[in-house]
Image (spheres, rainbow, N blue to C red):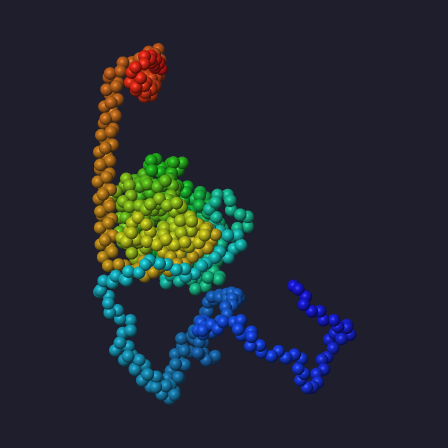
Length: 598
C-alpha cells in the first residue's frame, strides 16, 4: 500500500489530551464556478436509473448446541389418603369412605359435579366423535401426483468404530420405535475394540438410543415379538440365539447353549404364530433350520437339514441366508440359500427328507431377501445378485416376473403392506428403488439416492408410509413416501391378481414347450448314437491312428486347394488388361507372355 502522508510527532506527545477552543472561521481557498467547463459535457435526457425498493437483509448461520433428551419412567402409587389410613387395608378405607360420605360438603360437591357430568354425557350421546361415516365405500383413487419420498430422520451409530446395520424391526404397537442390529459381517475382519451393542431408537429422538441391548456376540438379526412388544429375539454372529425383555433391562434374558446352537452366524430368525407366543425358528449358513421355545432355550425342539439330495447330510446342506414364514400357511416355510436356490419346506412332514417339498432356482448368488406377497401368498419376491424376481408356487422352473440386471448389487427387498403391486429394493450404491409394476414394469417408479455408502437392509412400516434403510456405516435413514405409494388404488387388487395369473400361465406354456423340445433333442441324440454304434465296426488302435492321419491330411489338402482358387481369382484382372492392349495395337506384332502362378 502506498504511503501518502507521514505524521511526525514527538514520543512525549503520544496519548496527549486534545484541547479545543473557539475561534472565527477562516477561508483557506475559494474555487468559483467555471461556465466553460459545462461546454465539455453533453446533457443526457431522459436518464434511466434502477432503484431497489426492498429492504436489505443479511443472512447469518449459527451452530446451536445439540439438545439431548432422555426418557424416564414414573411409578404412580395410589394417594390422597390421610396419614393415619393405610390404603392397603380394606377395612380402614371402607370406614374412611363412610365417614366422608356422611359429610354435608361431600353431598353438595357431588350435586354440583353431577350436573356438569350429566351435560357432558348428553353431549357424548348426541354426537359420536369416533364414528366412521365412510367405512363401506371403496378406496378412492388419489390424484395422479408423481411418486416421491423425503427423509424424516437419521439415526447414526453412536460408537466410534462404525458397524453395519444388518437388520431392522418395527415396534408392533404403534410403530413408534425401531430396533436396529449392528454387526460386522466381514469374516475375521472385525476391528479391535468393536462394540457388540445394538439399540432401540425412538423415532422422535435421533440423538440418543432409548434402550441399549448388550449381547455376548454382535447381532445379525433382531425381531420384535408380535404378541409381546417387550420381548425381542436376536440372532448372534457366533450362532447363538438370544432373547431380551426390555422390562428387565439391557442384559440378555435367555440364551441358547453354544453346543446346540448354529455353527455360523444366524442370518434369519422369525417368531411363529403360537398360542403361547414363545415359539420361534432360526436359520444359518451352516445349513440348519432350528425351532426354539424361549422358555427352554437349552436346546432346539426340532432341526431340519437343508440337503436337497434328501440324504440328511450336513456336509451337502445349503447355507440359509433368508427366511420366510406366513401365518396363514402355518405348516409351510421358505428358505433362501447362498447358492441362489429357494427351498420350500413343510414342517408337518413325517420324515426329514419329506420336509423339503420343492426348490426354485434362478439367482446367480445368495438370496438376501425372501417374502410372500401379503395379498397373494402364492406369489413371493426374491432379491439376489443384480435382480429382483417374483415367483409363483405353480411355476417352479422359472420366475414369472423379474427386474432388469442393475449395475449395482441388490442387498434387500420387501413388499408394500398396503399395495399388492408395490415392492422396494436396496442396492450397493446407496439407492432405494420403489417398483410399481401396474404403473411401470421396465423401470422403477422412483429411484432415490439415500446415502453414499451401501444400503444393507430395509423394513417397511405396517401402514406403508415409512421405510427404514440401514447402511454399511450403521446409519439408519427413515423415509416417508408420498400418498400415492401408500394408498390402495382403485381396482389394484384385481389388476395385480390378473397380472400374476397371466404371467403364471405364460410361464407354464413356455415350460411345457421347453420340456417337449428337450425330449425331442434327447430322442434325436439317442437315435444318432444307436445308428453310429450299429454302423461303425470296432477298430483297433492302428486303424484309429491311420484314420486320424487320413482326416488330418484331407484337411490340409482342402486348405491348399482353397488358396490356389483364391490366387487364380486374383490373376484374372491382369489377363483382361493384357487383352485390351493387344486390341489397340493391331498393326504391330507383339507377343504377350502371360505367366500364371502355380
